[in-house]
Image 1: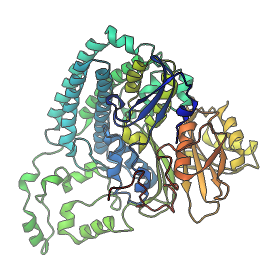
Image 2: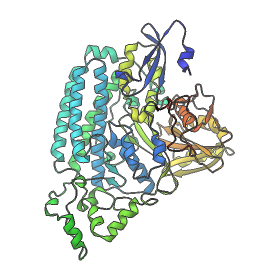
Image 3: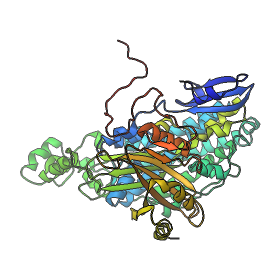
Image 4: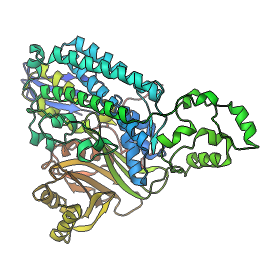
Length: 441
Length: 159
């Protein structure tokens, strides 16, 4: 079946396919261009190459199970996706999250936001010819991901945030790693500012290219750094503060013209603000006693003696459960028994713990929000990341819809590149931060 | 202006079309008749309400109920920092609702998505085609009666 542009194109023009397999099309998107020489007369953006039926899958998984699918939406900042989902459920259930877990969540989402912006700008710079910038930014991202890996156990598919808190407490050496990552990222940001801000080649390819007016940006439903680059002040963290963002001091950088350069600049400045947030939050986190594992007994011994008496001390757990010991539960997870996985020590040694464990994982039990519907949004790397969840009172969502920020942003691509040159598509598309997983779901 | 005031004003202005108003988890919810969608949305987009952003648009399939489908619109007011949810039911034999593509530019793609996933026809949409699935795809995957594991490969599997 011919697409729209094939039907509309004039006979004297040329049709050119960019993508779906094109190095600049980050993942999978196809842009059909109608060209008159180098000039783009018309274009058509085709998406859906990465559609995996996220929403359909979620309808058939329990609330606890489907958390892992949220990682795969925006795979550069999975922690923010986890967070948005968990907080939507918490809003329905009315769960209180401990303060320490809130700060951990703030730190983790800001780390993800920085890595998201770094990835976007690195790719954008590389595609405009600045390969050094790409390498520098990837280096900084590695330091950030080291911290994330140390905390969550994974680099990308983290599944770290839980309904009611987080999965595990911070690593004992978290602070050292975080400090190193912050210092290294600052250094890279300084270098990149020096390399690109006044670089003539970069400016020529980004300044006043793909300009969008604030009215159009609002009409397209843009949010996040792309909307702020047009000078509109809207940040979910400030407008509808969640977690402890209203207790932290940070600014929301704005652009002026809404062109590619402003989108670059807003992201650069936002990373600096995120680093500020991380430092403040890390400073306020209460220290927890270390070395609990030292006095812990072997599981086999504990189970044996649990028949006679209640186990008071610690039990040696599998290294996978590091940070999720019973003593730490108070600080990282909500006290509501029905919504969180009980500590493994209890499950192994007490009958109540075992019952709680089964009641959480049994079919038809577990997290069951009340009948109704909820919309909750967090500030993702690309903008407002919203979850609309309809619950029918069972253990599976009746409907789960994701408001993907980059879906709205990419919808404007056709308008932005109209009348420009082919070479302008690359930095324009790069500055939008299209993430296939989130766009196509 | 408070959310309850917006809802009361809306009820006053459209007594016949607005079926119910309430708040749910802090967001205002309006249940309307689908025929009045355009006039209500236009009224909300202007002052004093200024819901100038179409945040999201989706559909829910309540299989077994009549009317079966429910369109859900999320509007957002940047100047007032308020969200509003508008819901309208659609019967299975008359799956049509006015398009908002003339009011907001992102409605174009959002409505294509709902058309693709649920088969809802948007009257006045400039280019209503599938967006995620391919053109030869049959059926509407997010409907509740579409089997979860059904396969429709675009190119036949090799024997």
